[in-house]
Length: 261
Image (cartoon, rainbow, N blue to C red; front, side, top):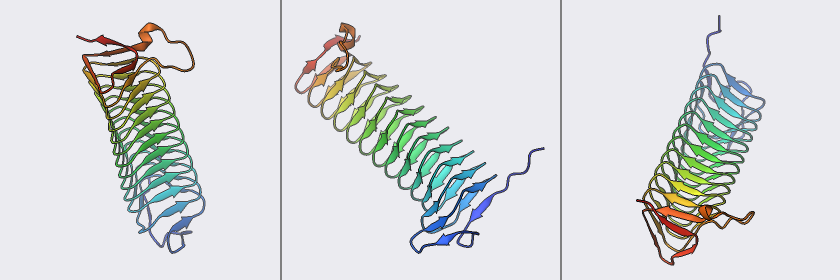
């Protein structure tokens, strides 16, 4: 028979907790078989991992030298930071930023009041939303939409089941793909292709190593470049710009427009 899960509450009297005045510190790992509830009024730094069989909830910020993992959701009133990975069986939510040296993964959504940053990939079963920017050394993938108040940047691809929207630019080392529309206050740049289930709109230029396609209109504040891959010769179909219509202030710099009926 499995043992009953035990909840752990961390307050200022928790064994081994050191109060530095401006932050709390705990050596080793902080582990709960059930829920982990952190009732502290300032940053908690744990030298190793923070783990819970159920959810993790903190009124302030939490930082782990290694990983943060919960069977259910992870929620913090301010920031969530890990030297390695952050992983949740449900959603991840922070009033301020979310940052991991490696990956960030949630079965449901990821939401931060400030930036979301990962040294490797960011993946969510639902949407990803940040009041600031979203940045990943690897890819960014969401089952729902991806939304950032500032820019979105990925070393690999960006993929969303819904729309992708950024107040500033959108940049991917590989492809950009959205089930709905793609919108950027500044430019959109992809090392590979760009594909949207609806329209594409950029306040500045749109650049893609391969083709650009959508099922509605493309609106661009500067110029559109498709098929400008720098590491191999492109085929004619990889230089196409497929859309119902194209409206670009300075036209098409490179690529062939194909009207979609």
